[in-house]
Image (tube, rainbow, N blue to C red; front, side, top):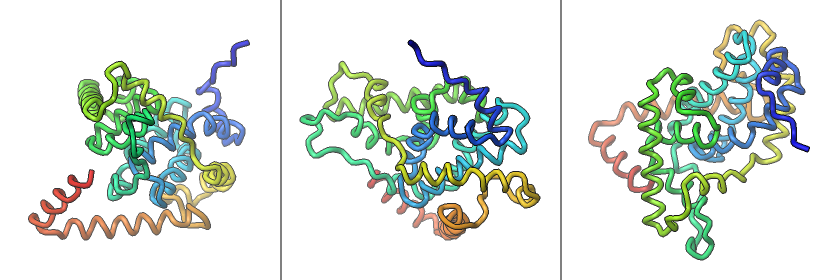
Length: 266
């Protein structure tokens, strides 16, 4: 007997009504995709963890300003692809925790090699590649989500795929293996159980924040201070702002030298 098809719209309707069962169902469906999307760009440090937490909080509080399931899903994807990215941009690949096995030809675990080679992709290339192959939406949907031309999205994804194929083949990956197959093999990674527990236990708190008068006075993407990950979020954002300010003060020569050092480590 075939399993019932996941009804995304029906589940999102429940989330709009702050139904915990609906949120749990959507979380179970997308937890792995969102987790991999974030950690493959920003790592599993406190910054990556805060980004993961903040993304799921946004799904709950965004219901206050979304009228339809379509609007809510769009807001969720936009936040995942833009707001999270802008806050985490200072971390980059040095926070990633994926490494090539010592003997890749013997292990034949090319999915690990693929994740390692993703470090060389540009921001838009990586983001759009992950939205296509990880989140699972089309180039047209990606273009609508970020209000960009479809050709621009297709160009970024094509460039990302060609770069990864070339790098993997140069590293010794057999020609018979497709990029899509190798990436599918990398999708076994799931968020830690402790992260799942914190997200689901935070639902009631987020609903109160969405319904309370305070929620309308703050930006949707900024979780208020409290214990746990949410309490660290504001501190992390302040640290990032300080880092951005110091970066902006650097001389052109220093900035050029930093870019060279950064590129040599990727």
